[in-house]
Structure formats: structure tokens, C-alpha cells
Image (cartoon, rainbow, N blue to C red):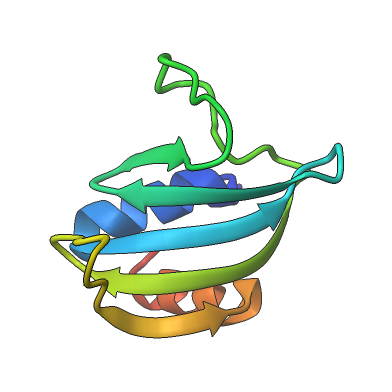
Length: 99
């Protein structure tokens, strides 16, 4: 069974010390930007639940793009490794990492 994409992205950031910026559309049609680092996710647009077992990225959300950034993340001078990855392109990185 394939794990939800949110779990796989969080796990990826524990294996590869990177920051992921995920732009998505929620099931309600709202745009959200989720930052994932060190195995944890946080929304930049709306409040994030305190319970880490509640996924920040809904199972039925549509991921529109993913940016990979170098860690540690500095919002004043972000260092992009790759910008605008599609979910298909990110899936290739996940599979290469065993996820």
C-alpha cells in the first residue's frame, strides 16, 4: 500500500535535509502553501493543527507545484535547489529515495 503523499513528503525531508514548499489547492478550492522540513508540515496560509497526526495536506488536495530549497531555510535569502516541480517529478525523487 502506498502511503499518502503528505507522509511521503515529510519522510523525504528526514532523509534529505531539504525544505519543501508545496503549493496546492484544497478540496474547497482554496490555495495553500505548505512548508515541510524535518518530517513536519506547516501551512503558511491557514492555522496548522497542533496534532502532528492530522495531515496538513488533505488527501484530496491537488498539488500544483513543489519547490526544493536548501536547509537551513533563510526566508530573506532562500536557496532554491529546484523550482516548480510537478507532483510527477517529485514522485521520481521519492521513489529514488525509497519512498
